[in-house]
Each structure stands twice: as structure tokens, then as C-alpha cells.
Image (cartoon, rainbow, N blue to C red; front, side):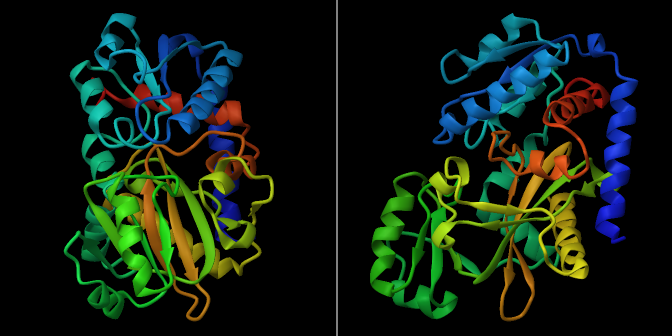
Length: 335
């Protein structure tokens, strides 16, 4: 049995044991933050409603709260004892809502203010990974005055252009010629003041969910993603039934373990906690894995990947949600 499978089984058993000893009443009144104001609002509503339904099915006193409709400061009026964050993108995954919850002394799921802010900024994330010796594609920040030919000379073709603070492939373009760069930049710049270009790694698209914090953090099974026409865009991520997800990946055990080790190191370097998901490309030519980005509030929709990995450990969607929420019991004053 591979190291991956052994750790997976142990994690699943620990989750089940933990939940068997959990008194759901100790969780108190729970707020599920969903919707929000980012470009990923639609997906957040899908995730949040799934989380809310799961908690209610477990007997938790859970209530939805949409900071895209109501003023976020009204969270204080709800008298929540803790919060499950099902927001994606800006104003939910970038440290802002986390900062408000800290001020309100409310424990919450996911990473803290700093790790959230760093992880959503793809440039800051890469700088930290590079300083820790972790592999990530070559990149540079683009501006309206960038020398497009110099960018191509540095990064090669094809290359990827995307907003530095958006997720779900919003505003992303795969650029195949220098003439396509200005339009790709304009598309990304329409969503974000900061735009990043990076070398396009051709190979297997992988993702690795992560749980825990610090030295106790663990990597769950790697998932291989096979989208139609090799295009894992917004539609193929959340709505297409044509995208294939392989868990186990079908890759050699040592490759899976190498990806897990890289993802775990990336998670720790950013100071993430509770859970996250590292997106990775496995270079077809060299077999080397490259980190793309870290998600600190992963999706929980019917097409989402963390529940898929948990299922491989015989942990149901509802049990995963309850376990994630229960981790907030370890927080003091929301920290």
C-alpha cells in the first residue's frame, strides 16, 4: 500500500472517531457565509447552500448569511458562535472577511487573515514559494506598458495571462502568439489592477486537497483533471459533465507522493490552516510538478474536488463539512 493510501485511511478513521465524540450542540449557533460580492458569487451560493444543508442534516443550528446582499457588519447582530466561510474570491477568500471575524471574536473555518491575503495574490504566493525553493512556473507582472516581445522572450509560448486576485479561471487566457498578448492583458486588467503572465506548463492538470495546520497538516489524495479539449475553464469546472476526475490518478505512486509533498510544503509556507487545495501541473516532458495557486476556501459544489478526495477516505460530504466546522472549536477568539 502506498504512503498516500495509508495516510488517507488513517485520516478518514480519525475524522470518524472525532465526529463520533462530537456534541453538535457545542458548536452553538453557526453562520454559513455564502454568495458575497466576487465574480465567483454564483459558485459560492452553490457551495454555501450545500454546506448549509449538510450542517442542518447533522442537527447543527446553522443559518445562511449573504454578505453580498446584507452589510457584512450585520454578522454581529446574528449572535453566531462560529462561522463556516463558503465565500470564494475577493471579499471572502482574501483576508477581508477574516479580519472582520477576528474583530468580532468569531471563530471561522479556513486560513487566517495573512495566509488568506497572501494566497489570493498569485504574485505574492509565487514569491513566497520561490523563496522556499518550491517549483512554480516562471512569471512576471504585466502592465499596459509591458514590452510584449520581451515577455514572450522571457516566458516562451504558449503562456498564461490571468488576473492576480481572481479564481475559477476568470479572465484567464492561453496566449499562443505575441499578437494575442495585448487583448489577453486587457481582459485580465478589466477584472484586476494586477495582471500576471506565466510560462504555460504542458502536462497533467492535478489538484491536491490539504487539511490541518503546521506540522499536523496532511495532504489528501491527488486528483487528476481531464477537461474537454484540455480547457478547464469556468464552465468545465462547475457545470460540465464532460470533465473527468480521476482519484486515484492512475499515476505512479511515487509521482502522487511527490505532488503531495510539494503541495504540503506550499500550504505550510503560506501559513494556511484548516483546509486548502493546491493546483499543480505535471510537466509531460520532465515529469516535474509545478505549483499554480493555493485555494484557501475551496469549492463545495457537486463538481468540487475536496469532497471527492474525502470520499476516497470514506468520509461523506456531510461528515467533511461537520469536521471542518468542528476545527473552529480549537480557535480562541477567532485566531
